[in-house]
Image 1 (tube, rainbow, N blue to C red):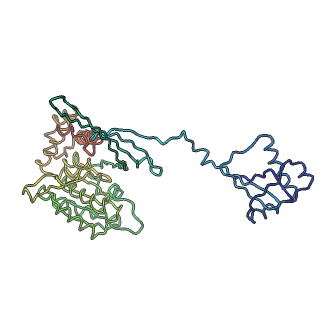
Image 2 (cartoon, rainbow, N blue to C red):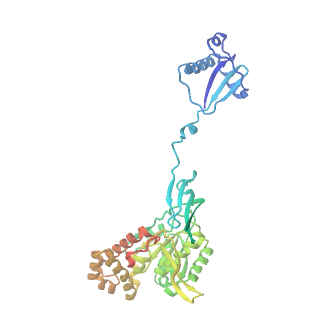
Image 3 (cartoon, rainbow, N blue to C red):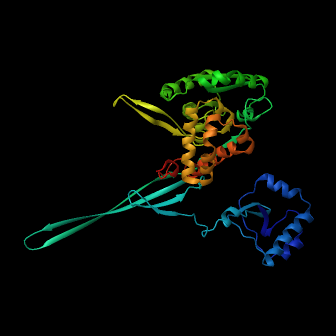
Length: 424
């Protein structure tokens, strides 16, 4: 805002000689606020005269300022104009039109016009839909055949909300057999940053894994000064039911898990699926960390975003595999190949089946490695020392995980059903 003296000045300390030099007539205007008048009168007469003279000279030289809505303020002895230079009004030009998007509805064929709303232009759009339909009716008479075509134009309006989920999660390889080593901080870091004095953590653990590693898991957190609360569930396919999800939800409520507090899911693919489903439902979604303990879970279940349970349908009395589920990403995955040694030969072979499938679809190098060393790896449960030293064991797992991520990454929600890793 600039203060500008206009066309007439009276006695505010200006000498009659100065007034005679101005060719302006005194204009009558509303009274200015007392605070403004007092400020003006507090100035020395020569200062006031210099200001007025400078403004009038600028006008005479053609240096006029643009204004939006001038507000005239005066007293009986003076006239001042407060001129507001509104950059908002002048900078917003008609040429800067709002970008409008036009498209055709793939279902109805209607013409859709999308206009972004002011406060959320990247997410919310007001739309109008215009649909034209034609209906023809043919009437035959003895004299003629009359075809009547009726065109109906219908319009509707509404809003469209668009939001891209920020999906990002790390699949971390852990040095062989070091996940529960107290010198390795990966497991602790994965459980998140908590306020000082918050010394508890929560984990869902497979019943078989708890028998083998339960003491190690608890000792790890005790060494960090933390108390671990565990929810132990069975990890068989027969236990992959909504009842198992309810068990986890009950334990989470009793533990009072906070909205942004990650919990651990340690086990095979079934336990990871059940825990992921519970994480998706509890408080409309909390972070969880996958720790797969089988070869199949390491190369498959741990790296995607699908979770779910089998559904026993009361109407058909049949069980539907993974019929109830969600797409919900983990906050992180921790993969330690040392868990494979705890599996029997049959379950390791199941994991190999998934790896062979990936090799046939994507990688002849991976297929060659499996052909040359697969039998030894199954028999030794990935613990053959020479294959570990040469890097064959880790390379097979690394390549398998990378191929799976490359295939799943661009199609996490399976909007495209042609998935080559599933041979379909």
